Image (tube, rainbow, N blue to C red; front, top):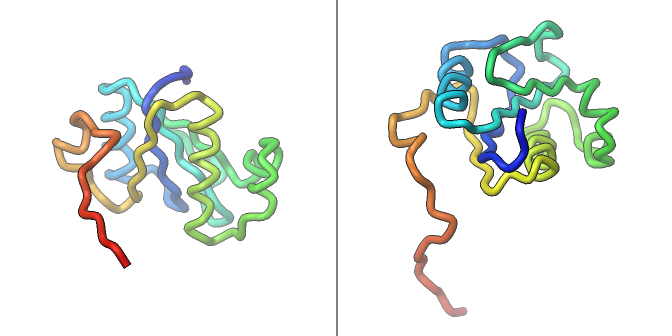
Length: 121
């Protein structure tokens, strides 16, 4: 894993499935860091080339106080992945889920800023 790369963050309790395998391959091809944040139900032997799997145990000794405060079995654990990405100087963080197969344009360039309507009141 190298610093200063775009980071892809996913939470998962699954063993490597077709989506996670596809995401890992896409991260390798596009030179992204891929963080999978585990939870209580995650397999203890999770291993996937191109993926940085962070088990619940690793999270608890990560030095991130939030990891100890964040409830298990909760979507909020994805924030721990964001912390790992930030710690590794990710210029951009992308997130998705372990059940969403990425379309080809998922890997395309991303804009940091978007035009949006302004609503007063």
